Structure formats: structure tokens, C-alpha cells
Length: 469
Image 1: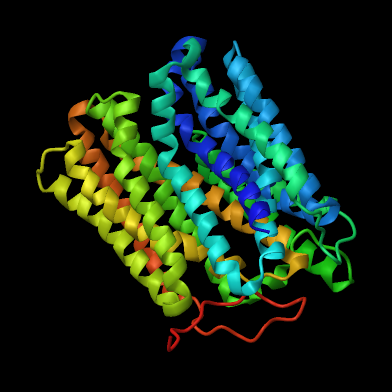
Image 2 (image 1 turned 60 degrees about the vertical axis):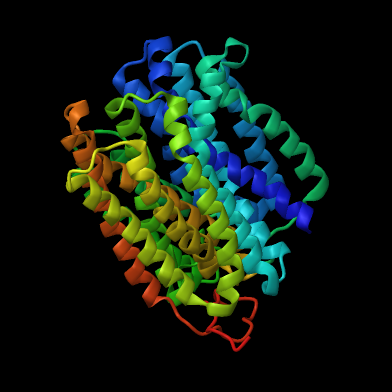
């Protein structure tokens, strides 16, 4: 059981790392492939597009055709497309390969959440999700450090291509382990894929995500156009469920407070965390003149802190319940606020200035992100594990895209010259602080008391009250 969990966590780590590791390679990729600014944007963000749009469908495919089979297919697609990325000689080919990587990740990641829900007994699930939170959070923070180290080492003269080659041996090893260790699992009541639901939801998510990752003057038009598609999807799924069919998403999942509050909570948290490391990297390299490796090293204390506090959260939440998430959200907000106050207060912007505040942010994030995943999926019924995992993963990716769009607009609107790096990072810190405050409010809306064990069609359990132990 533990070996199976460890195996799927490798896939989760790879999929998340790939969202961040490429950031530090952007300048070298553009120079080597003579990519335009638009092509570079697609190289960096195209992965998130297919990833976000297809996650729910990927979760449902696992429910229907087998989570082990779908996980292996996604891992295989991700590994093969990583090879294409590494050998690409044109920007266009690299863009296409990045889109394929996103498809592989969309098939792979929902199965990770589903396996934790299906394979791990309820009493141990908070530890399993805690370990997953450590893997995802560490990948998010360490991605740019790993990228900087690989590019700086220039292994065999591969330069930026090493950030893609690293996926290949890990992916191949993970496929062998998954084939040996993972049992097959499907949703008991799943019968067929709701193709109409897939089509309508894919269009709706594309209209949401595309304008957030691609600079366009039509952003609000795209977002407005997504509303009728989302409404049509909800009506379609309700109608299918009412006549006893097999909808892509059971809308009744959102009737439970743990799920309906937890999904927006995850979206808001990733709005802050994902975007912040992007703008911080730009401010360190373009503002302070640090190399990719030097900028990556700035993240090291934060990565270690996140790892430690994520493990600590796994021990504290079963005893103290929602209170740990409350503390985490408040500390996260204080971390962003302290960065803004220092930089707006005229303190010189150096790595030594921001490392303590990054550590504070990571302490809060470790206490919040890890148990938040369990709050949403901790007791999802087996037949809903895949699609609920897809919904949660989609919230993560849409949150990340939203953060890059909003926080990035504030940052780059201020960062007009290297001398304004401190002011730009301070402004971005205020926006992410607002997101963290919103997350804190949502945490206080999560239910406190854990209900009795749910029926097969039951709902996710909220966090426990503090016990007497």
C-alpha cells in the first residue's frame, strides 16, 4: 500500500515541477530557438492550458477505464513529450510538445488523488494527503531551484534542454514501478463517458483559462462567453443525473460544504502561491541581476520550511482540526504583508531582505495547503474519486492561471525598469496578501465536526474538532 502511494506521488511531483522548472529556462530557450515573445509565452503557459482544460475529463476516464491504465497512459505521454521538448529545434515544435505534456499531466494527476482516496484507509488518509501536499508544495517551490541547478551545471552541454531531459529517466522508472505496484481500480457505477459534457466543459474551461495565460485585449469577452457554457454544463449534468444517466460531474457534490468551500479555497491559495514565485523569480533575475542558479538558491530556505511545516501539519490536524488551517492562512497572509511593508518602507531589496518573509510564507503554506487537500477529498466515495480529483486539480490550475494574470499584471505594470523591482514585488505582495486573506475567510467557513462514516454515495468529511488527546 505504501509503495503504491509512493509510486503515484512521483507522477504528482513531476507534473507540478514541470509548471515551474521551465520558468528559469525561458530566456535561454528564446535566444536558442529565436522564439518570439508570443511563442515563449506559449512555451511557458501552453502546458497549463491543456492541463487545466482536460483534468476533469482525465479524472472521469480513470473512473471508467481504470485508474492504473489511465495513469500509465498519462505518464507515458508526459515522458514521450518531454523527449520531444528536449530535442526540439524550433519554437513551434516545442510549443506542440508542451501542449502534449499538459495532456499527459491531465490524465495522470487526477488518478493520484483518486488512488489516495481508494487505497488508503480513512484513518490514515490525512497522512497520505499530507505527503501529497508536501510533494506538490515542494515541487512548486523547488522547481526554479532545480531548473537553475540543471542549467548552471550544463550537463553534457544540454543547457536549457536538461530541464526536459530530467523527466525522461524519472518517467521511465515511474512507469515500471506503476506497472508492478498499482492495482487496477474503477468507479463501481461508472458506465460511459459523457461526451456532451466533455465538449461543453472543455469549451467553458478553455474560455476561462486561455485569456488568463495569453495576453489579449479580449480577456473579458472570453470570460463573459464562458458563463453561458458553464451554465449549460450544469443544466446538462443535472438533466443526465435526473434521468439516471452517468454525468461527467455529479453536481450534487457541491451540496456539501467541505467540497463547495474547499474547492474555492484551493483555487484562491494557488492564485497566490503560483503567481508569487513567478514574479519573485523575475524580480531577482531581471531586477537584482541574479543568475538562474542564484535565484533558485534564494528559494532553498523556503522549500525546507514548507517541507517541515507540511509534515508538522499532518501530525497536528488530526488533533487540533481546522484550527491549524486557520493559523496557516493567517501566517501566509502575514508573510506576504511583511514583504510589502518592508519594501514599501524603503528597505533595500536584497535576497537577505526577502528570505525571512519567504520562510514565513512557506510556514503558513505548509500548514494550510497540505490539510486543505484532505479537507476536500478526505472521504470522497470511491465512485466519485476520479471526477472530484479532477475538479480539485482544475481549481489548482485555474487558480494558478488567474494568479499569473492578475498578479502578473500588477507586477509588470510597475516593473518598468530594474530600479523598480522592489516596488513591483511589493505591489504584487499586496495582491497575494489579499488572496491569502480571502483564503483565511474560506477556511473559517469549512465545517468543524467530522460526521459519521458516509454511505457509498456519501460526501466528503469535514475536518475534525479538537480531540481530548
